[in-house]
Image (cartoon, rainbow, N blue to C red):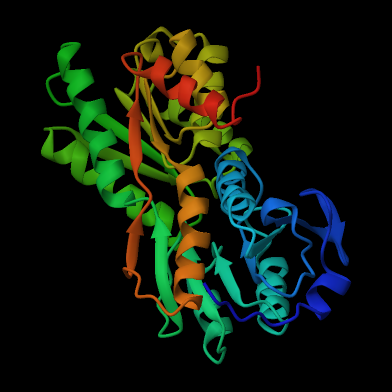
Length: 340
């Protein structure tokens, strides 16, 4: 295969780091560079792909691992990871996108914190653009690679409602703790959860916007326990950090009314999966983050090679419960994504 490569100059000179959490230029940012099969990131026979994530957490660490794995398996591809310091560091990520588009990368893969802002940034670029994890509308975008969030969350909502009904609840009540209002990913999960609950005969009685942050979810959960002293049947979370926080508050409260509350997370992170092992988290909608990162870089390279790609590439999901947790953990260990 003959491949044309443009030399990566300014980005590598000013932004590349050797470890994922090392500061790059701006001390508030993080990045990592990975070259396939040991090739130098300044080699002249490879494509250079910049992957900009939302933050480095349990989910995106799996995404990063998958993106790096693609580069390691293909000596004609170099991958550089960049990450802002938090999920709400909007200006920081916007600057990363702008800098990457102005540098000599061949393709830029973006998990946008704000979809509209990402679309604006890429509007005039001629680079290959792939959306990752969260979609955005743009004629410049070749593909979106991510979880089918609506269907995955709907399945989780349905499973939670059916579990509550199996425990004797006729019409389960549910509260959703979600991310930043307007974030397409979290809004879509909220819609999926709601439809799943309602179609199974339950009701979403309240939505709390917690910016996908554990501390805000903890505060919200404390308020829920006070507001609904007789209990709520289901607490659905659009990310695992919030689910872990909700479980802790329920445990710390000692409330008998919440002892049987079904808590569902979303991501498949180790901290949440371990709570399923302990029996305190009922279920988790696991994103297949490793596959997401791998397929996003693969899609970018396919476009660079002149190949057609699907506009949406579903990286998959899995509802994890006590019934299949052992298989899920085994898979994570095989990929080196499970800390012993």
